[in-house]
Amino acid sequence: PPPPPEDMLDQEQEQEQEPEEQEENEEDQEEQEPEDMVPEDFVFDSEGVIMDEDLMKFQNQNKPQGRSGRARAQMIFSEDRGRYIKPMIPKGKVKKMAVDATLRAAAPYQKARRDRGKEKGDIRNVYVESADFRAKKLARKAGSLVIFAVDASGSMAINRMSSAKGAVIKLLAETYTSRDKVALIPFCGNKAEVLLPPSKSVAMATNRLETLPCGGGSPLAHALEVAMRTGMNAMSSGDTSRVMIVCVTDGRANVPLGLSQDEPEFIDPENPKKLTKDELSEEVLEMAKQVGMMGMQLLVIDSENQFVSTGLAKKIAETAGGKYYYLPNANENAIADSVSGALADAKNM
Image (cartoon, rainbow, N blue to C red; front, side, top):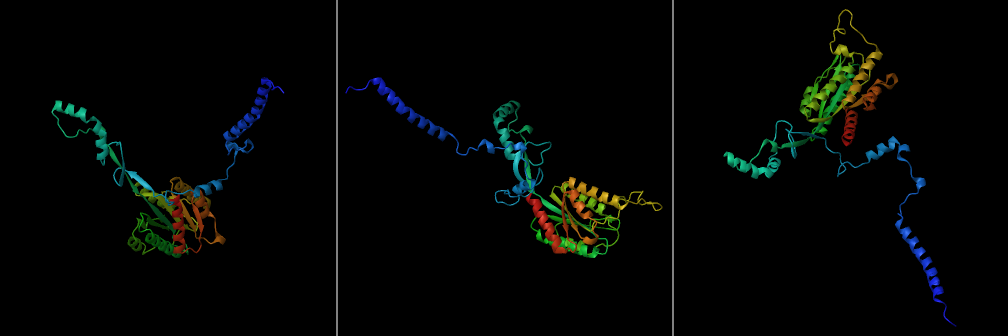
């Protein structure tokens, strides 16, 4: 039989090629589509999603801190003390010259300055001008200050002061290798006084705490003020980066702040001004609020019996954004462990 016409052969070849090209195109499209594409039905708008705060806090706590997983040490930067980390352009008078950076800044201008110097007869090996000066930026590790404000009034004053004394000495013994310091402020009568200034000496603490004042009223507001002032002075010295105030009290404030500060209207012998319990509580909460605003951490250890508790100690901690522990029979080990744990948490933040 005669062969089929050429037109029919071409049509059959084109029909056979078309399915093969379609299959190849489909395979190319499948390869181009990303494997991890998420369907549009499962995509949420970030602005409309409500995140659980507790979940975010837990996620932040699990983040590694530094390369080794340990807490980073707090650093203080200055121009007078510490380890040389890098040069910087000075602001005002140079305290410590960064010679290496100063010579590098002056190097590109040596030829032009040497030519000018020859014309003026000023021949030197190196020409350095004030615009080339670079200062050293220094860094040093900063320690923490733990201030114990202990209520030395009432029938349980002796036990509280003895426990606080033991906790102070124990903390100093544990932190002798660090730069942490401890201070003790007992408050009783009409005022709070610094019995042990910020120190890291166990011998000094033992000598200063031989005699412990006890009895009288409870000037809680003045104790927080004195502790805050002590912390501010320590931070201004440049050696302290973190202050924690540990207040051991039963929360029964009965001495107004004005009386502790010797204001005339409160010390008038004929008609002294007096405050109600609510006004005394407001004074204490106001001082606690100021402690939190100054960036100091407040740790309140409640030593009051739960059956007669007024709840003021817990309110103090909440107002300052601090921590609250109920330890009615707190000994030196319980207080020291609580403070060590809170201090470790603060350093890990």
